[in-house]
Image 1 (cartoon, helix red, strand yellow):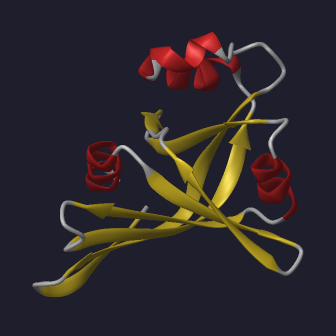
Image 2 (cartoon, helix red, strand yellow; image 1 turned 45 degrees about the vertical axis):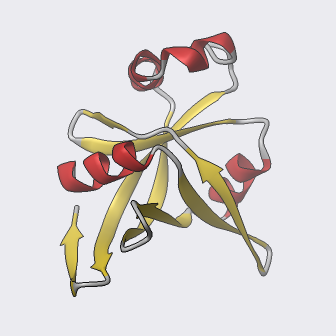
Length: 132
């Protein structure tokens, strides 16, 4: 899990895929955190992505590093953690978010990735898979 976290942090931006009905939806994300041994992402409850993850929690993340020669795909189930502590930990990791979000604002939402399969790809080597 640490390797996935490090990869996503280095990228800065990764892409989160969800499903809305039978239509895939993809958008850029930038938040990632490790809290209590779990990998977390963050959004707002007012966003469509929140409703999509609630309706179908199966998600996929994708990120690319450098010149596009290394990339990562993570398949997982998004599990909401409504605890203030989890939300605050994320906001502490991203102080710029505190202009828009507060841990107790009723909008801030964090999800941890359950049953995750991360596959690291490279133009020069074989894929490597990790589960967490």
